[in-house]
Image (cartoon, rainbow, N blue to C red; front, side):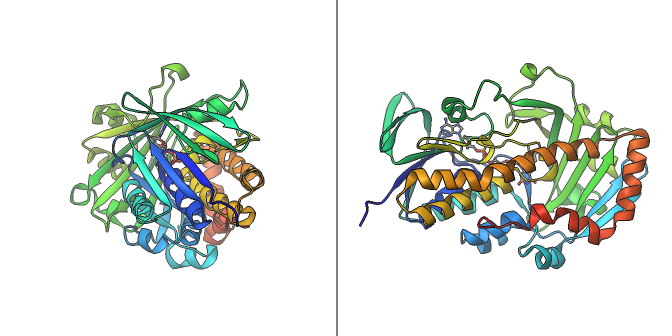
Length: 402
Ligand SMILES: Cc1cc2nc3c(=O)[nH]c(=O)nc-3n(C[C@H](O)[C@H](O)[C@H](O)COP(=O)(O)OP(=O)(O)OC[C@H]3O[C@@H](n4cnc5c(N)ncnc54)[C@H](O)[C@@H]3O)c2cc1C
């Protein structure tokens, strides 16, 4: 009989918590270290397509997630200028039947709370907040992790370390994926807001994901929490230099920063944007895909491994896929850490790279103007729901074990 493995995970976002659950299911003892003092209500709505919910089912948390989720009946694409319908794609039971798991929308804080509760109820998982992971040293048969809890240094030894510390991952920097491994500024900003349902225009209260396409901008909205609030995301183009683009999570935006950019849009879109009292501003970055995610006993996961622009709504979904694949690798290789991390990397690198690149392309398609936009709208109109779904099969019809 071998000793039980011990993993440290840096970061208690969706990726880190899902990875803790997946590893514990593979009988690995896990310590999650989160630098924030509390696991707070950050972010707003997330769409989770069937590839993510299928993995949540594998992790045994889908039923709990569904209690907080909303299932949109369709995606409705509209043209910014005149509000004309460009296309509709059914979701609801049709999506579930086609891709084997539901397509849902959920507040990020609700998803994180479900994952955290599951972690806290698992005797194999310990979650410590207020602990900032600073670095690590790899020895032959393990990793020594250096962290700070307030002023106090903390040292923990583990068999392996997972960096789930977000898109500005310090652990990714430390494992060293090359000089060209930099965050890439997309030139785009997401403005996010939550609008109380009673203040939102009626069209936005429908049980659907609305997607509006305009030149150099798009708008997404869907109801959350049984329709109590409407999640609104307006994406615009900005031309800061990358180094001047502010860090995200933090920044408030005023209605006057956003409304003028949509002044020539259809009145429905303007009414929704006008209903927002306060925006949060998220400059959008990604990285060119890396070929390696793991060096010796340390691997990255989630945004730390594959930050992406959110135009396919797949960042958290890919983090959840990573977690499921990591758990599957340790189920397969049990105490052989090296083999399991190689298996995890092999299962994930190409898939996540494809999603990073497809997300970039999607942004260009959404923001077309002039004749290109006309051609795009024609093609979308002619596609029809069946072919739209077929185009998404590669993305949504995915399980961690293939
Ligand atoms: C506008 C917008 C819309 C989006 N919409 C969607 C969507 O619809 N669907 C979807 O799937 N995804 C979406 N995403 C992406 C999604 O939000 C992210 O991909 C996902 O939250 C990443 O999770 P993560 O756990 O990898 O990283 P994070 O959520 O960034 O978590 C990282 C954690 O690590 C902690 N940490 C950092 N450094 C340290 C350290 N040194 N020590 C300890 N802890 C540390 C941080 O405090 C944080 O809690 C969207 C993103 C944006 C910006």
